[in-house]
Structure formats: C-alpha cells, structure tokens
Amino acid sequence: METLVQAARRRDEGNPLPMPIKSLADAGVVLYEGTVNIFAASPGCGKSTVALGYMLQAEDVQSLYNCMDTPRRLTVTRAAQALTGQYQAVVEDQLEDPDSSVFEALAKATQMSIFFRSGITSKDIPLQLGAYVETRGRFPQLFVIDNLKNVAYEGEDRGVAEQRLMEELDIIAKRTNMCIIVLTHVQGQYNDGTTPIPLSGVMNQNTKEAHVVLTFTRPDGRLKFAVVKNRTHENDPSGTTRYDLATNFATMQVGEVVGPHASRSPRPVQPPLQRWGDAHRWFVAEHPGYCTSCGMITEVGDELAYTEDGYIGRCCE
Image 1 (tube, one colour):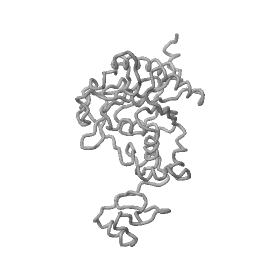
Image 2: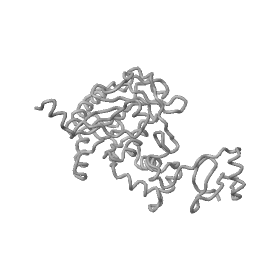
Image 3: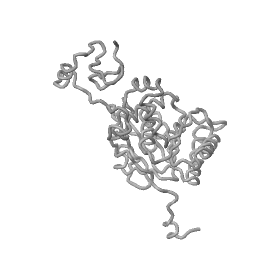
Image 4: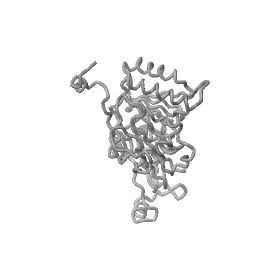
C-alpha cells in the first residue's frame, strides 16, 4: 500500500519510452512501460515495418521481437535496409559477405533480440521471456509480438482465445514493467488497405486492454496512421483522422529522416538523378563509363556502380 506521494516518488515503473518517430510523437503517441498496445492493418500494409523501424531507431530501448510472421532472412534484410538505407537487392548481395558494411551495421544494433518461431502457443511466450532474462539478466523494456494470428490455439474459438491472450499479456506487462506491442489484422471490410480503420475494425475487437491502438492504411501508396485509442491523449475511434507517416518501402526506412542515424549508415542513400534532366546530362558527360544496358553510370566501390534512380549495385558487365 502506498500514499499518492510515495507513488509519485517512484521512478521504477510505468515510464514512457523514447519516441524517435516524429509523426507518432506529434500525434501524441507515447508508449509506456507496463502497457499493452496494438498496431493493426491489413496484410502487407506496413505495421511490421513501423514496429521494426521503431525498435531499430530507439537505440536505448532493450527490445525483444517475437517474429512469427516473416522468415529470418527477410527480416534480417529489412533490418539491414532500415539501418543502411540501401535497396533489398544490394543488401542481399552484401549479406553473402560477412565482412561487408551491412554486417557492421547489424552488429551495432545490440539493443534488439529476436525469436524466429511460428506456431507458438500462449504458454510459450513466458518461456521466451524467461530465456531472455536468463541471457540478459532482466526483462526487455519492449516486447513486440508479430503477429497475433500466428499464435496457435487449441480447442477454443479464435476470438475467445485471442481475448484470453490479450488479458494474459496485460498482466505480464504490468508485472514485468514491459511495454508490449501486438501486431494484428483487421476485419474483412477494411482489408483493402485504403479504407479508414476504426477501433471496431481491429480483428476480433480485442482492444479492451490496449493503452494505444494505431491503425495503418496506404491510400495512394502513402502510409498513414490513425490513433483510434489513446488513454493519455486525443484519439478518434472512427479512424477517419489520419496522419502521414513518411516511409520509404524501397529501403524500409520509417520517419522523416534519411536513416535512423546517418553516422551508422555504411553508405548513405544516393540522391536520385532526373533521367533526362540537366543533372543527368552533366553526370553522363562527366562519367563516360555509362553502361547503356543496365544504367550504371559510375563506380562507387569495388565492382559497385550507381544508377540514375539511386540504386547501388553491380553492373551487368
């Protein structure tokens, strides 16, 4: 039992986590320790990209990623893209060389640990957390579950089982002082990826325990988010109030910056050149080694070259 003054003096639980993604911070999105939060969207809309981007950019937040929805290789590739600002083909090429700059970037993201295992049950989640504590000596500050549909259920209706799991996660969050983010899908009528998703549009409507619920859509190919539930700030349960979230899906980077930290990027993203503009004509004139087959117009390193659309890769020759 505590008095209000005693409770106010405590700083060991319920603290806000850093929010490096400016658009979310401007919309009043704060992720607190000891809470369960939900990111909901149609398949392939970008919720995993946002969650991964947050974990990589929040360098001071020790996180555990329960990655059940995406294969190991693809997840690693996406993380490397987010860290270096490079295209998927370039990163996949560099992942074949353990001495490449991509491995150097990945090695610096020590704040993040990942479990790759699909079809786990709700009983496996505490075991995973126990394994993390065994190796790190404490619970993670952030635990991301991707995706709720990948948790296996036995003998129960899925909606009932998911509600039971959300209740269990809420208890785990409060007892361990973890911030938990659950990624989940939406009801069928919102699966087009463009229709605004209300709070009631979250799959099986398991939002009762959540502190913050964000829904993501991509009208015109641009990622937008709606704050449909927020216990500490303004929210719009209808989902019609949507905010832009600058996201480059070609490089898997989230937010208003070129990269999480430019100093950590082994090679900065090259600025695109207008194909028939003055800059392109000047560049071709200055670099006569232009390849008309694949578009590579100058070397930038060992066997690597640069195209007018900003792609760094290997020339066809």
